[in-house]
Image 1 (cartoon, rainbow over the protein chains, first blue to last red):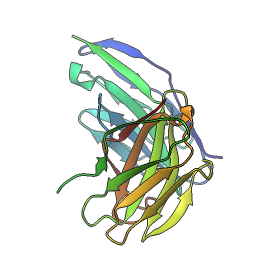
Image 2: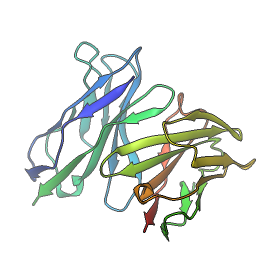
Image 3: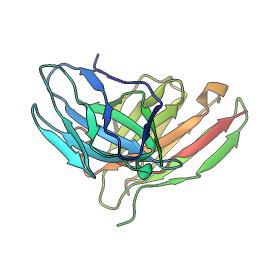
Image 4: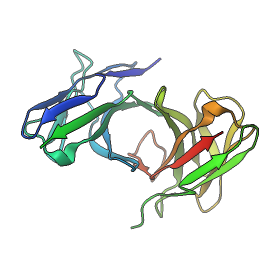
Length: 109
Length: 114
């Protein structure tokens, strides 16, 4: 069946560092891909999405590109802030949403 | 526009009891999905309701059930609670079927089973 694998955390970075969180997927067909973020004590928020190969999703300085050839959707940000500390989930959608396990990100001031 | 609301936010139950969780979707949204979030298993899809009918179901036992009302509000019921049912239960709504539209999540209900 379809699945999502993302790098395990926690990831700890200093403020203004470059961020990459790896995500790869297994799917039949061409599912839509998402990154969600969960701040402490809150539900999930959609961060960005891509619906077809080579699409780049972007929001709040975060970017991810749908790479069909490597079945990947890695999340990147050029300069992280303390306020980016959260748990990040990679997900794909076929007839339901399948999430990765989540990656906890800590940003140190 | 008000977001997705879930009640109660926190709940403590004893093994063997049953529990009902409620979700009110964003106004105008007709699809409601439920997810279970645990540290070990992560986020797992429970089911989706659309137009008062269950449209899709995850791999959970029959103790987990749900329903949707004509105003799109949804309830989820867990019978004969087990310790392993302790989790954050998230509800999400979308305008139409989740396969076609992005979802908006509520803050969740934290269920603790003792």
